[in-house]
Length: 84
Image (cartoon, rainbow, N blue to C red; front, side, top):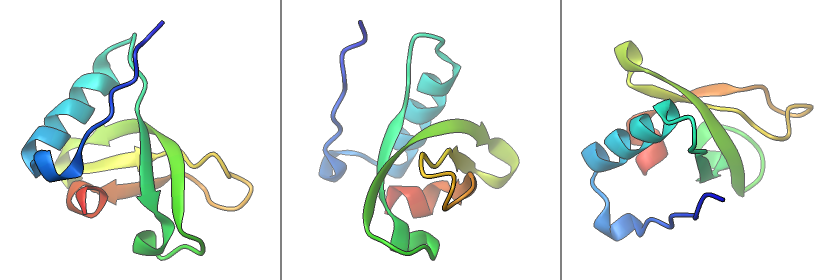
């Protein structure tokens, strides 16, 4: 059983978030779920939870694997957009 880790946004820097997410994505025992605002990605709706699937260093982006794939396909999101 993997204990959940809640992160307080006010205590998290952009660099620390990037490091924590990258570390979790390469750990076979970890899973990453993010709560993000669909509107920030140009989508309809509001707050939404989905898992992260990958990190792409050249573009400094994370792949959000939307659980509502019938509505939205996976999307690459820049780390700054995800952090905000």
